[in-house]
Image (cartoon, rainbow, N blue to C red; front, side, top):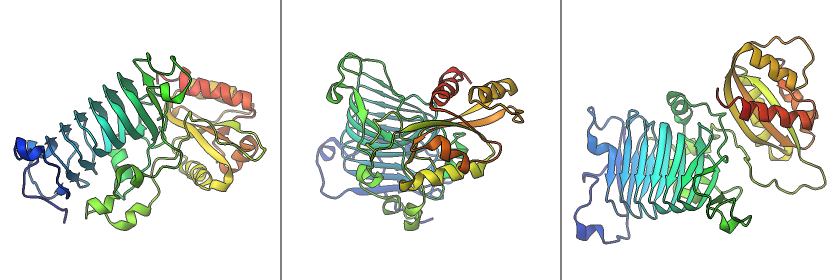
Length: 359
């Protein structure tokens, strides 16, 4: 498979060369077929300067990856990893494909990244922009300043399968529920955006704006048409302020969807992607529920009929938009339960996202 590959190892050539800033970046890649045996050096990038480093789909084989003390570099990990650590980097960009456990970023400055992982944490970082998928639902920042978050948005053909390999469900979309360990300068200190340790990326910012390159421009194993595919992760608005309307009011509706009802999930996703629908997904999450938990949640939603649903995997989706309580049932299958009023919607959302968070 023809990935671009350099013959030089990914280490600093020497201290003098490391201090120089070349006008042209080197591209250092690894194809999935390049190395029949695992070589530790292929999973570490250290003391690089002005390099473009990529790993093709299938090249990392689910191993951990370490990036340390790099400047003015771009990293693209188009494969599953067990864990990723990024330390002491500045003015770098990162794409990290589905990581089965944690991505830990420490002592980094002026970096931009798109990350899919189970847990995300920063420590002693400043001025970072992050498009994030966080399956655990609560990214953590500590001793960090001016971290801006947005929803994960990226695509190539094998990305959806990589989410499955990492045992992560694309409908776990709570990226904006940020926990700040150090709130001295943060959300409790001042209501002004500039006083927060974290905030939001501009609405509508594109992946190429953040990273500067599309997947096919980095890795020849990824074709140009793959960049035109829809991101497998549904777009979630999160806790950002809602945009202004032309006179109608935002309404909240909670939807409980059986995990195997792909048609309903696809229908909701298509509806949200159609911008004129005036509908947004605020957040969504998967839960494994018992029979009694399903029954109680259906009653909370105001469902009065005989409950046919059994325990199993469910997706709770909090939808916001114009008259969505009236319009949403038309998009849902017969086994889907929707809330009947805004008040019930909020109560059901609290139950599903918070009270059932132990599940």
